[in-house]
Length: 119
Image 1 (cartoon, rainbow, N blue to C red):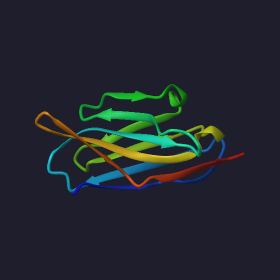
Image 2 (cartoon, rainbow, N blue to C red):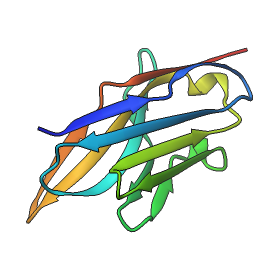
Image 3 (cartoon, helix red, strand yellow):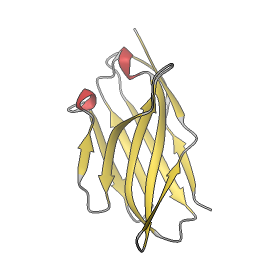
Image 4 (tube, rainbow, N blue to C red):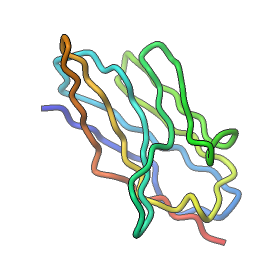
């Protein structure tokens, strides 16, 4: 059973920084893509950033230049460094991983960590 353990959320003032981390354990397969999504109250869950096992990254336009995603493949851990946080970044942030087993892809989600940006 794959488990994702998230940490690093909290309350921060606008302009501040937070660093999220997510450690995956129990995976019998290779972890392909690791990433972060977020969901604000009353809104859909949307992608924030993703990173492949090879280190290729992609970001939502709203966070480009402010957020940085990275991963430690040896530890099966993904990080999200969030700088210059804005009120609109307030949301529950979810870790997401894709596992590849042959031709099948499996998705797993973390339990979510709250990020609140105050003025």
